[in-house]
Image (tube, rainbow, N blue to C red; front, side):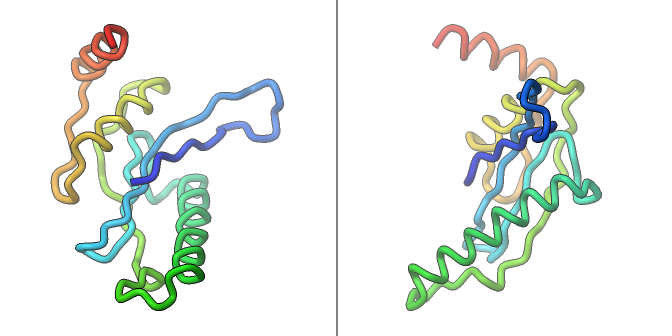
Length: 125
């Protein structure tokens, strides 16, 4: 899995607001999976950002592992439907849950109560 951060206002030097999401390279199912708690495949900013990264991963793997038995250049991109966050600030918690629990089948259910518990855990740690 790859943690992703996208600046939401890249041309404004004073606005460093951004959004976290995850990209998973699923070798078993031969695909890339994009997990985003705020956007879907219909969002052009998400698709252009994710597919730019995925294209670079494919090129890098092809360049450095061209003789590997596993080739990923043909892997499609799947935008996984996830639970939408209820605000614009909890994307990091959703992404952390994807990293902790994503198995390629069931999307972890992240609720407002889950975020409250995660805030407590991370504060304590």
